[in-house]
Length: 261
Length: 261
DNA sequence: TATTAATATTGATTAAGATCAATCAGAGTA
DNA sequence: TACTCTGATTGATCTTAATCAATATTAATA
Image 1 (tube, rainbow over the protein chains, first blue to last red):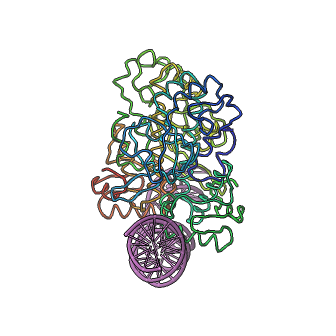
Image 2: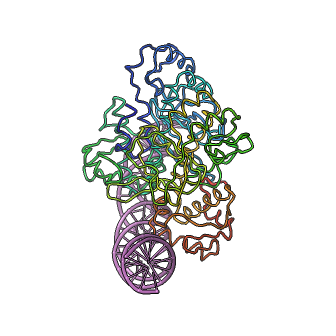
Image 3: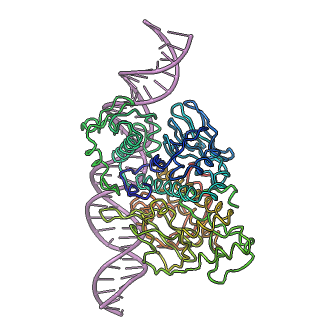
């Protein structure tokens, strides 16, 4: 599944959804300590390998809504795999404003950016009560020597993150407000859908300001873009509750810009 | 060096310069087949390890100005370490226009984004005659099992790429035209300087249009921003030849935005 | 060298989004 | 219930950069 075509899908947005295609059929044993099923890592491992990995990711952590999973400046030791919930990552600027660099949901992996400096350079904040598995990075590297398929998979996850970032760069560099919001909604839609939720009816976890920060727009512009899409009957907006009435027209709103359907 | 502070340096831009801090003092033997010195990978390896790595990266390739190092859609097999020259990476949109995702110089590593899908999703085009070492990725993964420090270093390189992409996202999402150009110039300046060239006097390899594509601006806007900086005596522009007259004022132009001087 | 094509600069105008400001809605609290 | 606070919407105005257009300059090639 990882090798498939989705890299050019309609997600111009920072989307960690691909990374967690948790081909459960390959997971033959369950892990008692921490359910690995939801996570992105155990793809294609055998029983014994799952056991080894399970020993590493056994430590669970809960983060309340509004709480920090990690903060900028702190020493990096672990990646975090999201078991449930919804988080944002953001960098805080000197003046106090924050720039959102991503929204993350179940199965996705956080902390990849901290590997290089071994210091967290962004904050990860829960937008709803969330639960994560802590994965000590040194241990992950150690066992990936023993389990080459895990190493390979991890490399693909990192690479996919780069691909996603490039598509966000493209979005920020070349799309108009309405196109950005359309991309954003379609991206969320697909990620919810992949997790078994409705692709056309969902609740946003973030504010207009956070969306704006992520999309390089002011909150008023985000609000106006929502209203515009609603006026055209493409979506229905009720505060944070979004219904997509015509997904094809929403896709057309994205324009050509490197988005295949 | 990789663990140091540069992750918050004044480079808001896609900058692969950090990844190649080629701590030459650690390289005790020279490699006959392909000079590893210029590359990003051999940091901190011993003689024997360098030998192993040398066997993998032995294949050299030249790309003429305007030629492709790789093209979107082709099967991914190797990373490319730049030995000399200057390249851009870009994605081609349906309508024919291209979006530049990065500029790359000696010592930097290309192809990380293709690992995930095993297909190249961007073009890499030489902006001047260039020479690269081809690094078969499967082999790199194999020897990184044998040389854990190489694996660790590779992970840091990938992570750094993610960090850089995030800072470009920040630039595109929150900076004005002049600030973007200032960041761009300072970034180039630093990367040239690290390679032993002047930090205040250099020639651009790319056109205004390519700069604009990278910075999310139209070429006219880039040109005006150059003229503005020149009018203020901060830089001197003679077509592609740039002189930085007052690097501090140029840094101030970037504004606060998450740039620590 | 002459000719052509590509690239760069500059000006005038338009359009998109930021900013400023007022109002409204909902959640939580006293 | 009233009150406060945060978040959302909408309008009016201003700023920035895109667009359109005219040269100018440089590079490429016959």
